[in-house]
Length: 387
Image 1 (cartoon, helix red, strand yellow):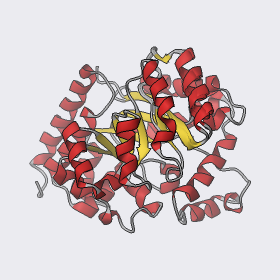
Image 2 (image 1 turned 180 degrees about the vertical axis):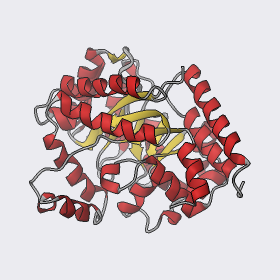
Image 3 (image 1 turned 120 degrees about the vertical axis):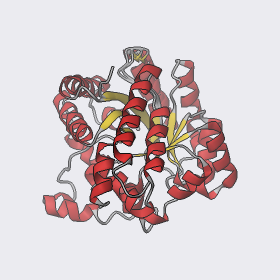
Image 4 (image 1 turned 90 degrees about the vertical axis):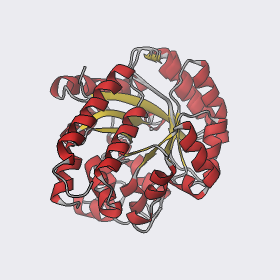
């Protein structure tokens, strides 16, 4: 844990979280779920992204009702608020639920209920949703998902703020993600349902994304889904890329999918030309440091290219990914980064400001967030010995 001095500063520093996937609960289909202690032990032994995803999707089996989704989303928002998150853009995977008979309407109503409750209980937090396609599902599945979302109208009504491959109010937005491992038509169906529901229009959703197993599913497989999202008026597009996949997956997500952000993106550091492009275009990476170590993308957090991104001028935010599995919410990730890289106050201010600028909220909200960051940095700068 970072020093008491910096822990206090990092606790107080206003944060924007852009990479937080849906929270799941365990089931009894695996010996690892026999007891809480057995489950925690298994979580410490993930060997790869795909190894983790087996447990991630199994956990969805207990999410059945609107209340299930509302309770889990609210539990995250309560912790986020306690850790000074001021704006959260939360991924969720509609296909993972509709494919097992849980309707999109059930999912989105639960998330919306949690956001409404959080607006009352945590008036400094803003929340948005970003749906994500799942890479491991066929491309038609992603098209179906996107079609459903667009038809629902949730990009138009403000329910959703983007799409990916996941006043001083706490702002919360949701981002549906298509699943790479499902067929492309499934993603199209999902998108159609969401658009029809009007959730991009009413503010419930703020973007659209893509998640799930990366290496076997290059971004180009889902270019038609992203084209459909743009045709439906969805501008805030993102995709998981460069977590396990090569730097070329990051380049492809930018060129072939037209995304504005890259989720993870750590392997972009292996390509100097790509780094220069990211810096020039101010493309934000949503880094998840603790997750990368737990899933063995890096042996130690100090091996991650965070310093290289800083030196290259690449904008990034620091996020928790799946804290129920990886043992750390956003503050724990901030502290782990500080322990590994000993960032200065000004460097932390730059990270926080970059996260604000890369957020999918309006300029008025960004102005509030900037002012909060400036105030906290100003209050702490004179009290810390390392600046």
